[in-house]
Length: 145
Image (cartoon, rainbow, N blue to C red):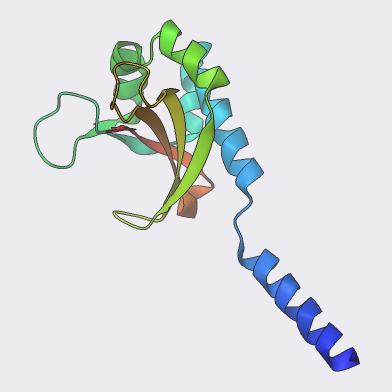
């Protein structure tokens, strides 16, 4: 019986050790939204990778990377409006682990619920990508679908 208890404890501990800290990922994504709302470009640059992959931008080419300073000074206002920020603050969230093109976590905010626009519409999620190998630095934006 002792052996069984020890094995159970070992499995429990090893499983929790391997899990990501979801609260820190959610906090970081929410922090990025606060920095965008307050237009704190210096802090955004510090908390971001050197370039931002903007899937929503009208860039040509597959990569769609934009220098972070250019992105925060020239592009962010086109994408993240006050109305969107308001929705992001109250939206339900989920996390997806992404391994390509680099290890990252995407925090998806449900900004339009299923059937909200029209019957049968699947809804819309807004994604903030945080690069895992770089202290959860902001690295990309996207939407699904």
